[in-house]
Amino acid sequence: MYGYAAGDPANSSDPFGLCPIDKDGIPCAAEYAPGVTVSSPEMHAALDAIAAEADKPLLVYGGDRSEEHNKEVGGAPASSHLKGEAADVIFEGTSKKETLGILYDSHARKDFGVRLLYHQKGSSLPEHSHLDLQSGPDITEQQKGSSPRYVPLKRPFNYP
Ligand SMILES: [Zn+2]
Image (cartoon, rainbow, N blue to C red; front, side, top):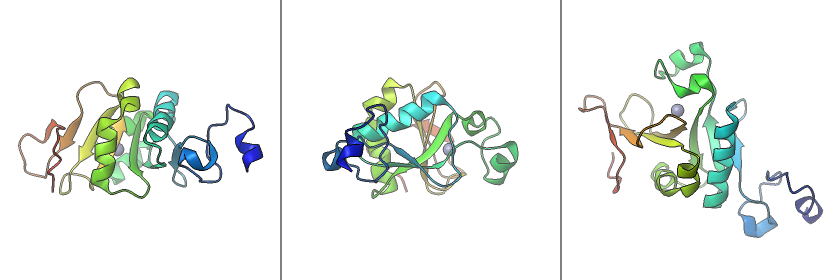
């Protein structure tokens, strides 16, 4: 295992799941749920950088979508998931709110120009953090019936 870790420095993935870095010297990276892909190289790199900075494995459980799949899951008609530039994520071993806080503070995320969108419980989609490459401020989708539907993300996150 140490032989592997000391091998190709270009290989920054964590094949043994030994993240955090003090266990094996390999930075944490994004991990993809079975069948999930994110085709944008920029987003791919951003997700790895966000995981490495947080020193936690970042599970990507939503990524690229076909038009059909996007309709099935109730995605926005112009969703970044259709362009391969979006990811639905959670840091393994943390709550959705903890994940939100870490993502909100992430310098790596801001450096890559990644926007954070948080769907609150009771909004159009299940509660989760969504990342994409759209310009504009970080926002949260409020509960259904709230007006406006989207508002700027701000601490404290006293969401339902
Ligand atoms: Zn999403």
